[in-house]
Length: 149
Length: 149
DNA sequence: CCCATTTATATCGTTCACGATGCAAAATTA
DNA sequence: TAATTTTGCATCGTGAACGATATAAATGGG
Image (cartoon, rainbow over all chains, first blue to last red; front, side, top):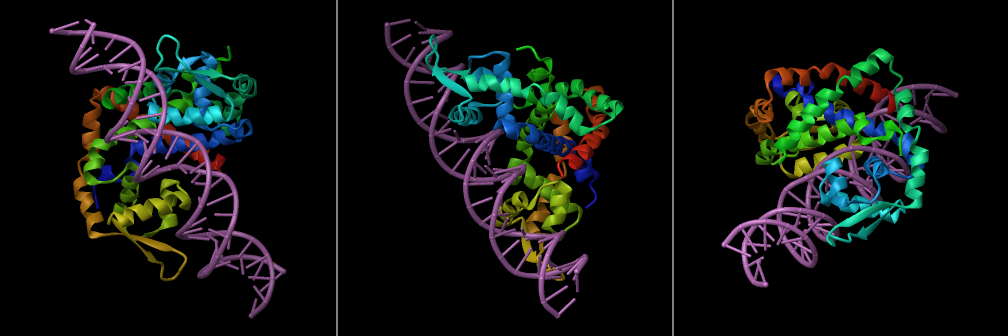
């Protein structure tokens, strides 16, 4: 078998896939004590920025459809971090709100970003190299969003 | 809420997570006709490079544990792409081999990489920028692998 | 204003990802 | 060699992702 492009080592997507998985794994030590998963953490990030949002708005931020959001939010509701109430003007909507417990997690999450950074233990130089990927990742994401429509 | 680091837009991991998901979605048009999923495609990439490998070796290449590999391989066996036989010297091992059908997929997969590239429809310049992420991603993956041990 | 379409959410089924646990075979050590 | 540890694989349970489908509420055009 000789097609170079079909070798694992030349697969860009495999690198993304692996990096994303490993990165989520690296969050475990910080999210487990809070009793949340990484996708739930993402939902909380959105709600901490702005409370009381309909499901679809959260979904748009996270680029996730309702078939992923609904069960995710149901689990978070069951765990006591959020409530899901009916929309007033648009009764189809479910407004997602933080509970006291959900708001309290914000304080506990304060040091997660810096702890993550410390955990990776990279020299500043390498860390900068990693962070320089951000604009490229954003461009890629924009292109792929168009493609997945 | 004011901690800048806790805003979604400043989350590096969220970008990885989204890019990986969207990228896998972009593979759908090319993998669906072959009747395989993206993780199954990865297994095939490994086997096309070298047939007849034990589960653990494939898992090491893909950085996946047996609790993910076993069911994945069972589905691929059921679909007729591989067989799983007992190891001769080490009877604990399951040797994974391509079937005729699994080998035949290699021909059909020839144009996936170039089709993917065409699909994204990026100017060469931007595409190069994306590909320049590779060394950084590899460094990141190496660091995270250490961390996840 | 009525009907067609779109939108917001939910449900179902399948596939992954992964922690926890189990088990038997191999390797190591006493 | 006997006892201990490690390794390779499997199973179970839970939480995502996501295609397909359903339903009711909003919206828009005629």
